[in-house]
Structures are given as structure tokens and as C-alpha cells.
Image 1: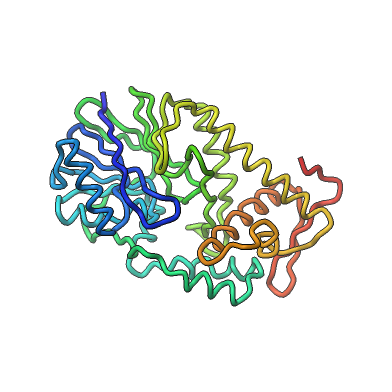
Image 2: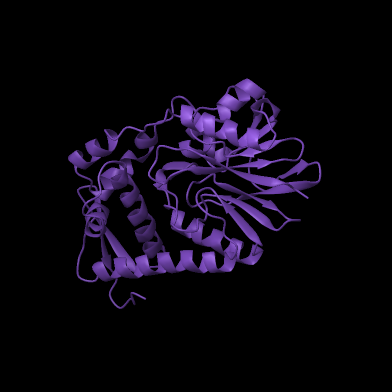
Length: 322
């Protein structure tokens, strides 16, 4: 039986602390160690000490995804403990020194009709945490479906994209416990993060379609307990899936309603729902709206036309908004 313990690690982000998890079975393994800040290092070290484990005892670090609040301390643990880092293949490029998050998405901003001032506002909202970078050695690349073995149990890796294209969850089949990262959270709905297709960087991944497919997998799995990347545990997985589906169903309905008599851009749609947001939150708003209009397009519920490089969307005649 696996012994899994939550360690609450400080982050400087509005989402609050990140949940790091120690699997206290040999080889000692940390899932999502937290961001690379002095406060995070301290809270992680103190959490391990309270469990009778030293930082240097950590043999493996598993990253559910590359976002800095989850992945930043992986390199540090590799350096001080020789811990091997496990990460999905689609997250590798995001954890390199020359990775440019916004450059990959620049064509999407242009398609959204984003004004130059708004783009500057996003770019000038500097991340308070340094960019996470993997070490040159000591990295194991995952694709999903691997079994990571421990004394007394195992974790199955599950590729669950939508919030990030290389997001993984980890399932303890014996304990029926899912380490979910940011795939599903108790109090908020994860952003369907705008991602270029890693096989064709001019195309956008259907992130909402991916996420809804993952919810179907989660519903069928029906774990006894979900340990999320932020906030409280989830002890009713079917209810959590239902809540997440309902959130997106309502947003799709609302967007379709706005597009009933309007032919407007993603940026205009985003400002309709979030008139006051600033900085990086503008990116999150654009990301969410793109995910939903891409889904509506795939379902043939709206139409798209281009005007000076900007995509304009309108509800298709005769389509229900339900």
C-alpha cells in the first residue's frame, strides 16, 4: 500500500499554495515540488522534515506538468539529491532555457484581434518566479501508460491534456487514489490553456475537447479519492466531473448566445465577459474563450470568417444555444 502525504508549498501566485505529494515508499518520490523561490524551498523542506524525510532522501521527482508553480524546484532537487525527474514528452520543450511562451502563441493573439496595448500589458506583467529549466541529465521522458513501481505499490501514469498538452495524472490502483495535478480542482475550474499543436505549431490544440475527453476517462475511473494540485481533496469524483462539465456547458451556452446577433473577435468576446481583467489574466481570458469557440466550431454551431487576419465568430443559423 502506498503512503502518500500532502505538503503545502508556498507560491506567490493568486491561486495560492501548491500541493506537493510525497510517496513515502522506496524510492521516495515527490510529485510537483513547487516553484523555485526561497519560501517554497523552506516550506517543502519543513514539510519533509515533519514526515521524517530529508531533502537528500528524495530519489524521484514527477511533474504533472511544466507550469512553474509545480515544476520549479525539480532542478534543485536533482542537484542536491540526485533525484531523477519524470515528465511528459510534450512538456520537455517548455522546460528549456530558450523556450518563449508568448512567441509560440503570437499568431493566436493576432487572430484574436488583440490590441497592441493589451499585448504589451501581458508582456509587462512579469512572472515573480524564475523560468523552470530541466537539468541536462537525469530526466526520464513519459508518454502516458507507464507504471512507476515502489516498495508496496505502484503509480500508473495517465496522459490527461487540456490544462497543458503534456499534463499527466498518477493513479494508485490499489488505493483507488488519483494524483490529479491541475486536471481537476475542488473550488475552481482549470484554464484550458491555449497551446500550439506540437506537430504543427501554426495550429491550435482543441484543448476543451481534450479536457472533456479526460473528464469521461475520470468518470469511468471513479477514484475513491482525488488529490489535486491546489486546494482540498476531492472525495466524490463523479460530482467533481459533473461540476466541471456543467461549468463548460454553461460557458458554451453563454458564448453562443452572445454570438446570436454579433460577428465579433475572441478579444471582444473576452472583454464582454471580463471587462476589468489586466496583465496575465488577459492571456487566461483569451485562452478560455479560444478553447470554447474552437469547440463550438468543431460542433458546427458557429461560423468563422477572417477579416484582416482576425477571426470573427457568429452563431450559425438554426443552431440551438443549449
